[in-house]
Amino acid sequence: MTMATHDEDSKDGKDTMRALQGLEDDSSSVRLRAALAVGTAPDPRCVDKLVERCAVEPDFSVREMLTWALTRHAPSHTLPGLLGEVRSERAQARSQALHTLSKIGDRRAWPAITRELLTDADDEVARSAWRAAVVLAPEEERAGLAEALATQLGRGGRETQLSLSRALIALGEVILPTLGAATAQGAPAVRRHALATERLLHDPDAGFEFSIEEAKRVAVLGTTGQDGR
Image 1 (cartoon, one colour):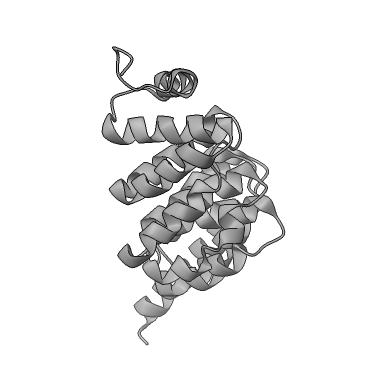
Image 2: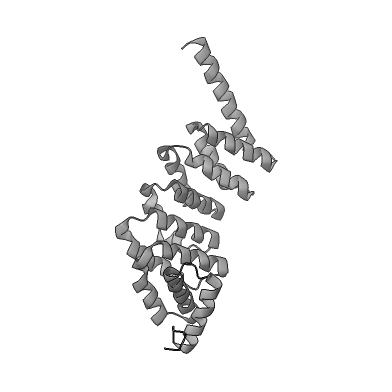
């Protein structure tokens, strides 16, 4: 090793240590710059700290930068830690790991998207699981995924329901039999959500609120046409 190479390695090591320390700074702006630095110059030695920080980082913008930094590293380095985090007892760890897996898009992570995660009691975890699932699911698994997601129809408030509708719509027309079953047999809230989702599938320009109101009308009148037929 030449002296120049040794000096460069030493400098890189110091930069890495500085960035890792910055990820724990009290200032969110410092943490943001540290995550940016790590992503700009990917270093496998930083992956564990990035994953660890995702579980506890309170600032949304910093969490997004942490995710971006992880996507800049090879999946072979990031997947093991992230797959471990989806089983964490900490909801934020599960949610952020799932979010990051959806951004990485490596389908080797698909087996980790369990029904338990898709039905997680924490809405943020469940929403992250839905988004990850539709990105990672192999073609032959999409019908089964649609059935699993449909068990969550009617869940939560507007944002949660909209997230589920978007996830189902991303699967395409494979969801139609499942939505049909939910419309025919589900509780009122489930039927409304299923009808609104089907409307959005066929008319993406229709707003979610309008689709929900239309679904309520259909549920009461039993009609879908403007003339009542």
